[in-house]
Amino acid sequence: MDGFCYRYDGTFAGFLCCVRDIYQYKEPPNLFLPLSDPRPSLYDERRVETDLALARRVYRRLTQRLGERGMELVRRGFLTCLDHRERRLCAVIDLGLRTGPGVERRLGDEQVLQVSAAVRHLQRECDHLAGFVRFSDRGGVLVGSIAPKNQVLPLLRPHFCDRLAGERFALYDRVHSQLLLHQPGPENGGRGRWAIVEALDFTVPPPDAQEREYQDLWRRFYDTLAIPDRYNPRCRQSHMPKRFWGDMTEFQPPAPAPGGPALPRQAPPP
Image (tube, rainbow, N blue to C red; front, side, top):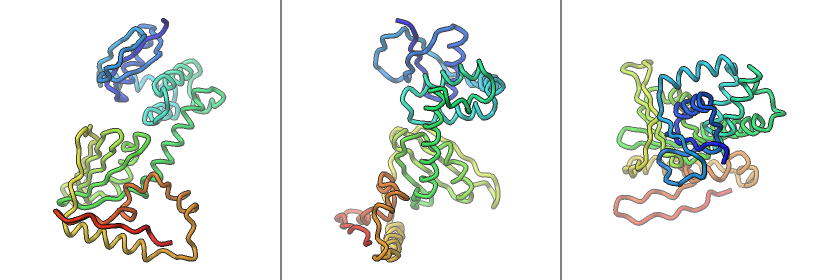
């Protein structure tokens, strides 16, 4: 059976190491699987270890051949939830190596078209989450939780690190088990430190009494601001997709006090 299965650690650096092996050994890819995936493959397998120095060299070389925008398409395409993502990106890279800079404009190519559409979906999701993420205080740290379809934390990071430059915060991606951490700089206006780390068993701690009070005030403000005569659920869902509501404070029932019963939450008034 033609083609190979490449097993790697699932990172972008690991993918670039796979790209290097594809061209060095002339072994075309048919499947990519994480190293931790126990599923067997019908293809011959090649295990690829991540080498950060090698990945940087591959990235620089591809940027020279594909151009900045072409490489940006590949980099963002890797963050999407596109089916057979790595194989499609390899096809885009191969086209770019043959045709040079401007590969991102070749929408007549099926693979470029698919990756470009997935990147637009990624950007729309990031735009939504930039406004819909809700943080709450947990012992002096602002904590938020999201369930995105794409790997959005690398793109959301500049927005929230700027907006909350003076705060310690953590934003948890439950779908991809990733955690964005930020710590402010030593002085006002100092540059903060951040990291995106794997978090397989992260649990958001329960709110304390003061935080529950603030959340209740926010829900009351949201309900009071509603205008019954302008109630339009379809319009609201078009601007605020329903799949984000589960992580938005204004749509949640009040958190019970420790040891107390859960409080009912009425639907927001029109």
